[in-house]
Image 1 (cartoon, rainbow over the protein chains, first blue to last red):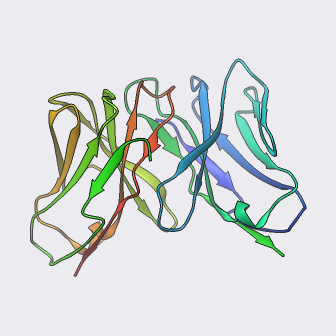
Image 2: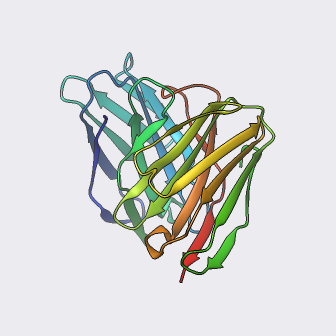
Length: 113
Length: 113
């Protein structure tokens, strides 16, 4: 099955700086790669996703890039703000069937004032 | 929260007792999932359902069973709870299979003493 590795586990950046979180996946057949943000006491919320026919996607301050050859994808957050502090999860299509997504272990992003 | 309600939100139970967690959706989505979240492990799939009475096992299904008698409800049962099942449990729904986003509920925090 799919295996997703996520780095770093903790990332601390100054407010206003950029943050980058990286993930690798194992199954070359995976075609869908979402990113989730989880705030304390809540469920993960989808923030952006990308499919294999696209190399990059942007939505205001966040962007995701995908390199299918290298089997890695990254989340980029620019001009970070205090409300960006949260745990972020990457995920990949689990295996082409109905068994959903395989998740990375998460990155705790801390925005320092 | 994409019309997903999990109940209860918190539960403390003793080792060896049966426990049932409920997930209720108002979106009429076909696919429903149960994940558990543990520090250092991220989100791991327990069971999923691809229709009424159609369910299958995920990565960490031992000790758990599920039922789906109606489109809107997906129940997770711990037949005899153990301390290793102390976790936060998330239900998720999706319109499609692994190439569609998951929408999560706010979770149930279960403590087995």
